[in-house]
Image (cartoon, rainbow, N blue to C red; front, side, top):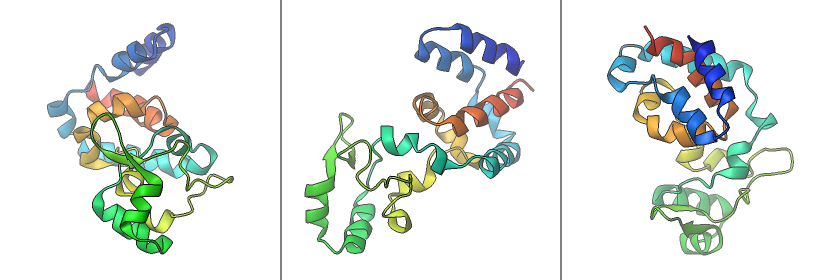
Length: 164
């Protein structure tokens, strides 16, 4: 069945339609019965996936930065929270506070993060696909699947579960 979904996905020219086809079988209630399997798939994919070879998230998606994140990062950089906010943050169309540049100003040439130890929670949790996070973020996955090959692989594998 996964092959059918992927074949449909490949044959659709519009990316948003591809994503809808792939995500269509995902029903929250049905997936809740598979949380241990979802966590296992997430773990398995990330055992073989090296994010440093990709960094699409860091080059394409400005992360949400909470007040707590701002305080932690500012302290790490040795600046005030206000200075950090003025230099690195903006408000997006949804009213969220996000990093003001893409690619991220903290992304180094080797795809490592200059502030990795204190990076925003959104970065720590990306692509939000482990255990209960997968189910709670189905709408977010429709966006993130465009950027994260690991998430795409996770969704391909989980789509089999949704048929059971």
